[in-house]
Image (cartoon, rainbow, N blue to C red; front, side, top):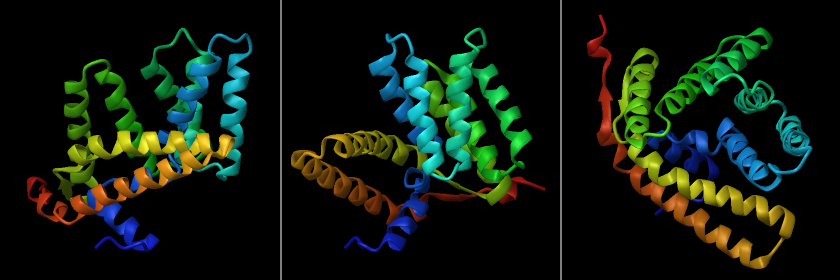
Amino acid sequence: ERSQNIKDIQKDFFKTGNLHLLAISGFHIGIIFAILYFFVRKIKYADILIFLPLGLYIFFTNFTPSALRAFLFFFLLRVFKNLNPIENLFLAGIIYLTLFPLSLSFFLSFLATYAILISIPSQKKLILNLNITSLSVASLFFKKYQALNFFISFILTPIFSILFILSLGFVFLNLNILKTLINLIYNIFLDINYMFSKINHLSFLNVDKFFI
């Protein structure tokens, strides 16, 4: 039976390689940016209405590095419209590295974002490139790779996105029906991850033998 203890839940997400979904990350910034952009894109001062709330979010999350990286990327994407997304990603990386030291989390998120950008709009290329990126990084730093990670991620990520959007809606609307729906989806989200956490140990590949 699934534990309700937060530490046990974190361990389950670590086992499936999806702990990043629970952390404040660039993924959350991306969702908020997409929602704000959808509603205000045709307004004259759209960028102010987008980046002011995002800036406040960054501030209240104590300038979490992963969230700050995503904020820089989207900000530069809007400011330097003559640059393509990959050029903006590298520019955001340069600016970030002038302010903060190089870290493993930066390396992972930078490569993952790059893999996504070069895969657009092909979903098959996206899956392939993300797997290659994950395999390379996991092999280099951890000597292990979770073979089922992206299969699990493609199930959990859409569920989490819906959960995150509904949670934002509940903050502003405070409707009981939203609260009930959030609790239902939240438990489904945790149950699916828990199920995979019990079998995912079978999918760990030890890849250190490929390195001299």
